Length: 385
Image 1: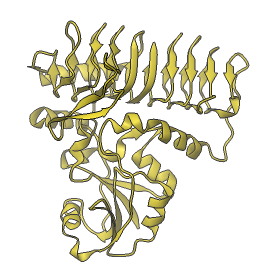
Image 2: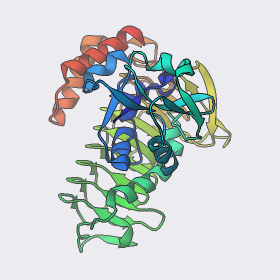
Image 3: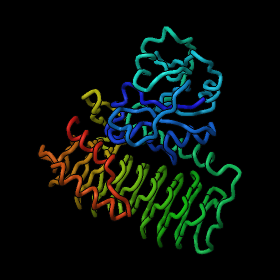
Image 4: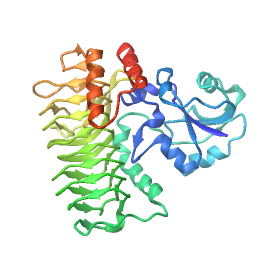
């Protein structure tokens, strides 16, 4: 029996972050959804997604599988329910089927779930990742759970003697990490330092905090929980309650708070976001799926899709959302809504060849290449979003 994480039919509710990846590859806490399901079930997990994204994933094996909505959190109750599934049975929560065990193809799974006459359906409530701003509100709890999952039964590398720390029992360092003299405070949550990650001199970090493989914290940085630096991200200046997916840079002074940053983004020196309105009122964020403003709470900074670059000294407004592949620059306070593939803030369209060249340059700086598959996805985004 294989486990297949499928994108729900309304996957676009997680735009702009879902534009360039299956929902199974969304990072929250430390792990992606796929990594989390694999660790918790100890099974290989396949991915079923939109047709234009399938070039990133292995072909799915034939036969009967357990199909699971990729936006579902794999907590104990969900996993226990999954293992009770028998052939032809399904699980439903809030009116939608989120898991079934059936012989189906990824092109037909949505038709099956919308017409479940062939399935024996049981009610089972689950938690789902519903909106991009959920990644801000849920990162703290997921980070705590992921640290426990990843480090269970393992010993941390020794904390260097030159590191000042509070509650060292809550600090876990993976092999290959390089931690210079700095201050690590794990009073309010754990601090996880991934393999080959680097913390430079004078950084002050308060948990819960995680930096994944190859991530870097720059000198004299101030980082508050709950913050995640994904693989090969660079964090500098002041950062709070922020999730950076991977390979992105916020290397300079400036404030980034209550934010989600996709992969391969770069924030120029001095770029800063506001995360609270001057009135301390409720922040609303534009929903690319419903095309309307949605109230999300008292704090929200910026949500940024993959391949975005932001100019030096950029002033990003409270509750901003930037689509995929934007070159963001402009004077004064920037707009809260920047459509995908934008050049500047005046409604000009980014030219695709320039975007491809620019992304290739950024990837080269981290010893990566812009693959043909990734370019085909960007071409689709430029044509359809």
